[in-house]
Length: 83
Image (tube, rainbow, N blue to C red):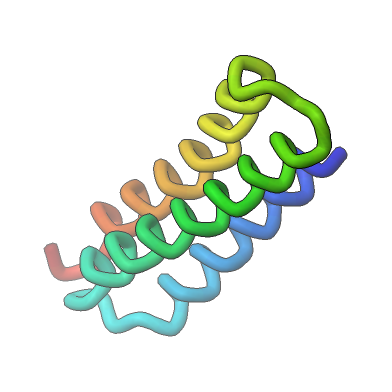
């Protein structure tokens, strides 16, 4: 459930950020979001490992949590009108 919550929150944040950004700035917003989201995912990874999970257990989940919102950010940046 925590994984789904993180993915949904990431999608909501990137959607809101892209909605606020001007079309010409959406690439920069996508890069900034990706870096910020990476920090959030690394924090979540450390939290999971501090609760007894191994890196091998956590890594696939964290990659999914990172990849879905970042892929959405890239897609939205490419779909910006006027490109």
